[in-house]
Image 1 (cartoon, rainbow, N blue to C red):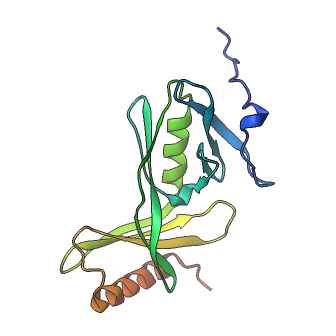
Image 2 (image 1 turned 180 degrees about the horizontal axis):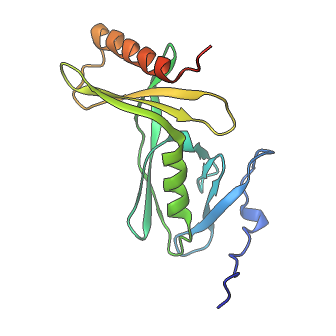
Image 3 (image 1 turned 45 degrees about the horizontal axis):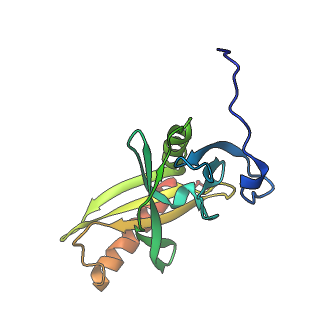
Length: 175
């Protein structure tokens, strides 16, 4: 066994339509048919359906040893300076030869988080997150409410606005 053994290159017919500055980090065959692949790049995770999730768009990723489960973050509402996120439908991928796919996904999703804090509210709570977006300067700001938080109340939105503004001010560059 050679220390320099390299994994085979991704077949050309399976390459996603990469941006000019996007590069493949790793890839893995999904299932045992070999027909579909999952591709991790510096910009995000290309799913077998041809859609790319940016690292900042993945709310959760879990690895069971055989299955990679991705929970995408969906924008429920856009507010001034931030988005309100909710969990999207979980997508699962059976990876019989995962290589370093699970490690890359974990590292890239974790690295995209530049700021996170949780604030309790009178009922429920809110997590505020500032995430790095590959290829862009600055952070993308979002919130995710705890279950049971009355998000439709104007007072909750006002308090959230204040909390996000405060978070943004703590990491803003000094003039």
